[in-house]
Amino acid sequence: MFRRLFGFFTTDIGIDLGTANTLVYLKDEGIVLREPSVVAVKTGTSEVLAVGDDAKKMLGRTPGNISAIRPLKDGVIADFEITEAMLKHFINKIQPRRRSSRTRVVVAVPSGITEVEKRAVKDSATQSGASEVHLIEEPMAAAIGVGLPIHDASGNMIVDIGGGTTEVAVISLSGMVEKQSVRVAGDALDRSIISYMKRVYNLMIGEPTAEVVKIQIGSACAVGKEVSMDVKGRDLVEGLPKTITVSSSEIREAMSEPLAAIINSVRATLESCPPELAADLCDRGIVLAGGGALLQGLDRYLMDQTGVPAHIADDPLCAVAEGAGKVLSELVFLKKVTTAGV
Figure 1 (cartoon, rainbow, N blue to C red):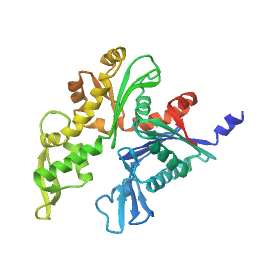
Figure 2: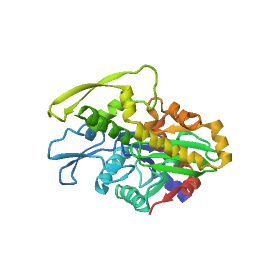
Figure 3: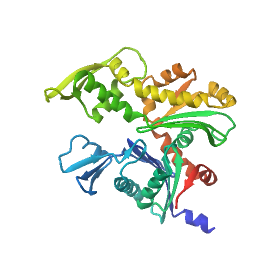
Figure 4: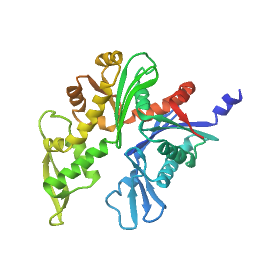
């Protein structure tokens, strides 16, 4: 009776703490916050000036006394203090929706992170005001979020391509039978475009511009008519602003190396998968989640390279956050698939 009454004063939050974006799921309300994982601070200090959308607008445009920082790199915390400040800001932003004495949080993390990195995430969430912290591996959260029948005795494969990591897993009977975590994902695709522009055109562009190019004309394989767009940056020879025109085939070539690394991780997981589960995947196929799943032609490219059908989740951007939030409703399962915080 006491436990049931105490539950009324508990706020349950699921967090997808991503390299590129942070999403927050509030129990009974769904996703209530989706903002970039960027913090603007006063240079040389930990004084926070802006967080999320406001801070992202400053990337590449700050004066010397302001630094726009992405505190997570390759899916893990690179700056503990700034991550803590960012989490505190996001949690406080949604707290007015619920007045509670306790905040129970489930944070999705890459499956390949170390114990030290796990501790850093737990400590950040605890210092941000959470009274109880659990960690769930991103592929499991993504599978739950997209609605895969993970409890069944059958093979389900999820490929979650985020900003910093690509998570690949084959799930059966509520557990991950095979998994791969590689620190190659959306950010690596952006960096490959930046490198290509520098190498081929002597043009320096920033990460925001590279991301726009990737979204507008990037693709994993040829999809329909080739298109082009103007890209603006700084000429590395003359040091002056410059505009060049690039084609979709060039951007596809630029992204070929990181895309190959992602495909290799999928192939490696399939090759080590038990035969019975592999047979299930021939029928069920591979489900793609995460922002990287939206790259044009990726599902077709994956199918061509592996021979296994691939499908994009209905809402790939929200899959991990949805899964982290939904698992809060199943306390027994929560304890089985997560690591309890202190």
